Image (cartoon, rainbow, N blue to C red; front, side, top):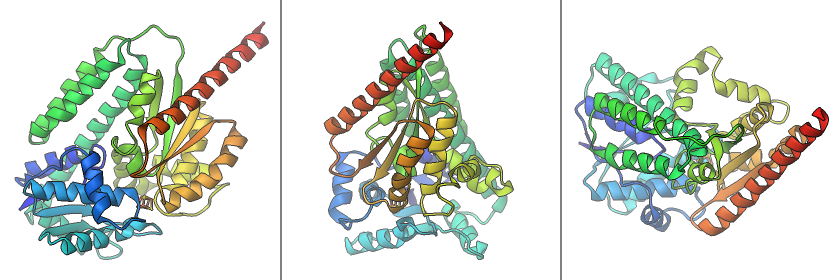
Length: 369
Ligand code: SF4
């Protein structure tokens, strides 16, 4: 069995480490690229949301590398993600690919199905072994997400932000050849040290932007046209409202005892949106409010064209912007998104944030005078 899975931010690093510890052979898809998107767009329904198109591109590129089994998480709730596994299986079948799918569907009263999927993917019935592998995987994803976070902060403060880019490029290039959780964790620790050693500018103040929106577009750099990097080069610290480790913490950790970050977001969003609208629409509204309360300079919402939950959130964000006096930019991405137009909008937004910062500073100075 040669296992693959779609790219989704840093998830592949944890998936690889965990499965390799269990003795499984992993075939990673190449990093998402224009080619991935072209393949996915060619074979997916035109009106389906962008993540599915990229998934299809990832699968086909992995199958070309020898993969024969695809791992995928399932979902329930009012959003197309719940149909992804069914649509994706059909697309690959119609294209003549003979691959097996292992889907981790939510238990919905039948935990045995989920447990069996885990056993099949892990290649063992030994629950303790599976649990240990999962624990290591969780640790890797937390460390990898923390590394991304550190790089996003450091880039904004570095004298030469390109140094941070180079270290992270090395990391993503070399991680494919690092095997097993212990080696992967050591490599993340080593990269952390390299990032920490990058020299910083002397600056007393800096701007902060919170990224909200659909999880896939927030965490997959190819899809959001490396927004974190672009903002970092403008000297802006970036904080992402959703990451794989936050998702795990909510679904398999603190969320179960009612104290995860997501619950705070639901509470903040309540006056504007009381119910689940699928995906992370409610979290988008809540996160924007929390960022405003934490005095962030601005918020950027990213969503795939046609994403229903985020369209609901988008319709509410102008009210949040007005009520909390925080600039919010919405960026829609799809296969037609051009880098030049995207960058122009981002630059205009950053100019607006800088102008507001200046005005705020002058206002404060006047008050003090
Ligand atoms: S959240 Fe949006 S983009 Fe993601 S699967 Fe649902 S509809 Fe598609």
